[in-house]
Length: 169
Image (tube, rainbow, N blue to C red; front, side):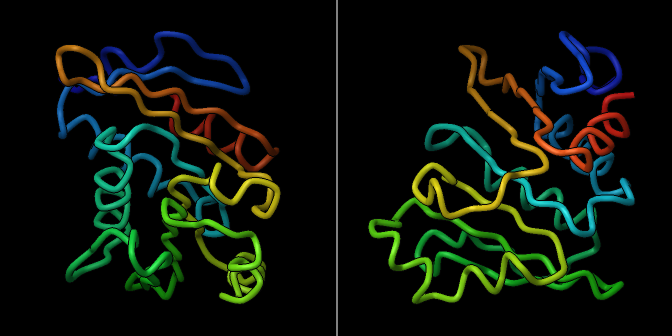
C-alpha cells in the first residue's frame, strides 16, 4: 500500500496537506494523482526544498504521468526546459537555482512564458521572488533521517484549492 493511501493526510485542510513519501513509488503515485486532475493544465506549481530533496525527481514523475517521453533533464543550467505532453499540453519546467539578477527574468522572456497557457513548474522559486505569479500550489519537500520525504502541499489560489481537494482524497 502506498503512502498516498495509508499516510497521505497526516494533516489536512482546505489550504494545505502534509504527506509522507516513504519511497520513490509514493512520489510517483502522488504525481499520477496530480496529473489526472483536470485543473493542472494551466497551473503554476512551486517546488521548494534543499538540494537533493526530490524536486526534479517529482517533476520527472509528473511529466511521465502526463505522457511526456524521452529524456527529462534538470533545467539547472538552461533555467527552463520546455516539454509537450501527447495531448498537446505545454509544460515549462524552470529551475532558478542559478538565477542572480531579476533583470534576467525580463531578458529571458519568462514573463511571456508564464502568461502563456500550460503548466509551469518552478524549482528554487525564492531566487525569482517578486517576479513569479502567485503559485496555485507550492510543494515543500524535506528529507527525513530515514530518507523518506515529508511534503507539505499548500494551495494559494482557488485553482490550487481544487487541485488540493482532488489529490488529497
